[in-house]
Length: 196
Image (cartoon, rainbow, N blue to C red):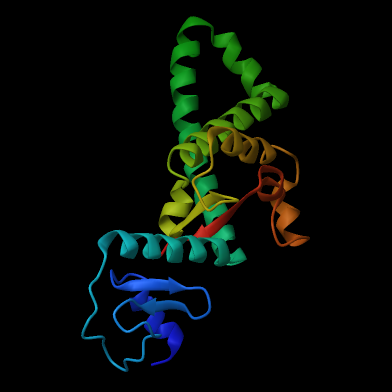
């Protein structure tokens, strides 16, 4: 067992002490740990162990970004989810407006700009709500990924809204072809990572 492997135990032991020259040492022996399999004096500190685990998780979040394949799968799944949501919205709209003003239905069918506007609103609603509250969309739940900010935390509402707004920019989905991160990642200072 090398020093790094031993430090995993020493960092969470109640008997550890920090020495300016040697680093973490045992307070009983005043030496660096030298055990090979296990330490007979080891006493685990639950709070230190929790902090060490959180540090490991934060380190993993900061280093393991999701592959482009998973990002593409997220996109396809989320587009399908939004189409289903749009169908429900249009059925409700048709029932409500069709009864009161049938001419408005014809106007919607012939107005591409209005259709684009409604699609953009649904996109903003879907992504902002999902990513601001959970950091995940339906696609990200299925592929076991999530959105995080620069600190590795769930993005706040503002960042989630900016990510969603960027998705309404024409050809934004193709921005992944020319860079490591898409525009909605860069402009909102967020990224998508694998969930362990």
